[in-house]
Image (cartoon, rainbow, N blue to C red; front, top):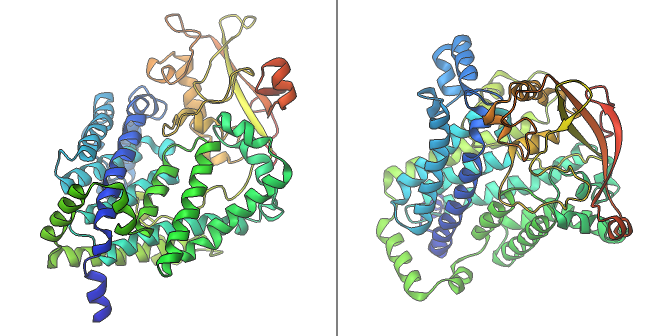
Length: 487
């Protein structure tokens, strides 16, 4: 009984931490919603690459009303461009109001979770990323921070951070990828990641010793440090320092949208109010503590929090177990594993378990006569050799990101590409607006398209100084008649 009393008791040393986390989470939500607002119609609107209404109609025809549970989204009511964009813009506005303290926290957090979950399902494969589910689970747990934080809620945030970090390291080794085992992964990572920025170019040219040390640090930070989370205070502070340092290094060398910012926020729970208090004026601290102790959680809230803890523990363990079992899964495990993709809680995490050793880029060109070809230009993925890679954190251009998966190392992720080309053949504005340049804007659509594949490498410092080029490219042939990337 004492253990339960302690778990459900107030975490008085995390009142400021919880308040600051909600503020930071609101800003991450705002960035994620704003990023989606300018893309979602081209990805999933009626004239988008994968129209949502087709998915909903097909799911309902095949599954009946159970589809409402497997695809929990507000867009069953309306999946128009206005509804999709309206939800994304509304989410950004509510998140900003929450960050400013101008709305009630619990209704705002519930609204943000529901809106983002709806958009995750709307975006389909374009939203099927671990940072989206990490935001959902963080947002779901944050709903319970509105009352005074309890030891149980802090423990659930610790468990989330542990899963994110440890499983990412575990799957790097479990995948059997030789580049992680021989400490050569960073020889390729900066050049072959989905969307490098200028810092990636500089990091790629570090000495081999530094790159090997970086792999060692990564594995230490993901395999050993996560266990510090559950040890006494000095170890937790070390875990926070190492994890935050790792995230800052990633931001300095990679465009990974908001996941690193969110990971840094989760590290707040490894700290305590003695540390966080240094960031806040005394008057603000007094108000936060007064509100927390006045609001304290009641019996109903404690029961709900307990049920949530059991649910997350069961789901997270079952999904991790399912990745390791060989052969058919038990029926109970199959049922449990349907919940995380549907509701965004209890997911396994495995960031970069394998490393690409070369970069292939596709260029799409269109023509009226088959002689003169005009290129389509993407906004952020590597294209012009003399264009420096851009820093775009926390934005994630979903189309540019998905282009990284082609030519298909993973064939099951390529099904969206033909609908994308079909949108270009019809010059659909919602899709072409996702590009930096549509050579047929305001004109008749092209009569033919070609997809050309190139192997890209960073230029050397000497080549960059003499030519001004950040990249060098080698023509491989037409897609899909090019060999897959070497793993």
